[in-house]
Image (cartoon, rainbow, N blue to C red; front, side, top):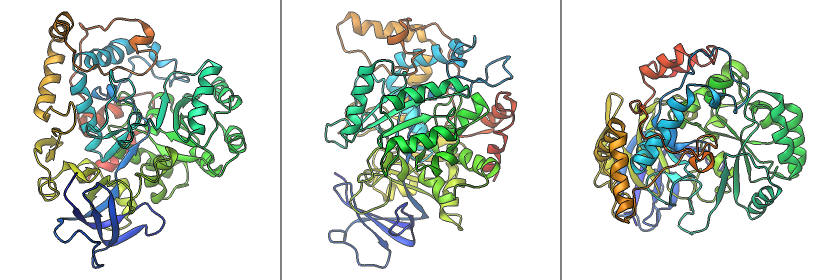
Length: 507
């Protein structure tokens, strides 16, 4: 339970009823729900006479929903395969590159096994500093959890105890598996699935198999779908047979980085498919969903003749994923009765949707989940009632982060402890492995193990032991910084298509 709170600012609701309230007040109750979204001068709802007041002077949005990530890998930096100048054509190609195992697979597996809790904390913080309040891609935790920092979509039940979303990074092969996930979708649960990733037209067979097994369902969320063309999207529209045709999860940075091409989202949108954004993973993606918004905007301007308006781009990171998950009665909009997942950014005037698209990490002023302040400036965190908030350096700026809260199991690591734990594991992974072995010998529960979820890396699938003697590079930074853009500029695979992303950060 939280204390009632009123958040003032320019409210960008992502809701059709009142899309923008220029001088608004968002009322958050002690039940963690939004009680009113209205003009500042309107009479407050009952029970808010003594509520805390947060004057943001910024734009207030729904928290961002990242519908595609692979969280355990997000401690790693961009990966440019040495000696490779031509783009890959199939998602099965780049894991076979000789440098992949030592640079990506082994370090991710080692850190996830040796410092799983700290890895998860670090990667969730990396998402939060970009305004993310819910993220997909944590499906391989050694034990389920709910409510650490951001919402983890595969485990989020909104405290009902009932699983609401399923995913598979592994291609389905058995009829029984298709039948199982189709039954989940018939029950109203979402199924998030990598589909036809790459440019090789042979990958269309994955789509054809999914269609023949009746997977093109309103609750089906197809990740990437880069090999699909207009005929497939037209057929998808007919096969869905519903006002809701299903969802495409678009990760343009990763697509362009690996394949020098991306999903035909313009055609998919024209055929009634719901378009959402996902940051994918840091070896070939943006550092957070706020960064991915810029890649989507860049591609929209340079290759799609501005098919999508700024408001539609913002919807891909807010209401669209909520709709695709069938969570529109819970999150994704600023609307009475929904959970108070909130992002506040600096307001630079002009169109408020363009304001979000152009916002960068330093513009993020406050992030709250269920009305609880978890990240932001010192002043806003204090006024929002944050306790135990500690300093965190984000680029050249200092913010506050709340990682410790006594009523949540395992939420017991400070930001300083997270960094210290990761530093120790990176410095001497063998020593950390020997420490963990002592737990097993003594019959004690070992620390959490955050497992990789890509099928070619997952030790449960490959049977390969964790390489604890691997060299692990320094942690990837929290923000899109000079080193990141230097890596983008020097990379050859994307053929310069991503060079323009740096322009969004030059101010």
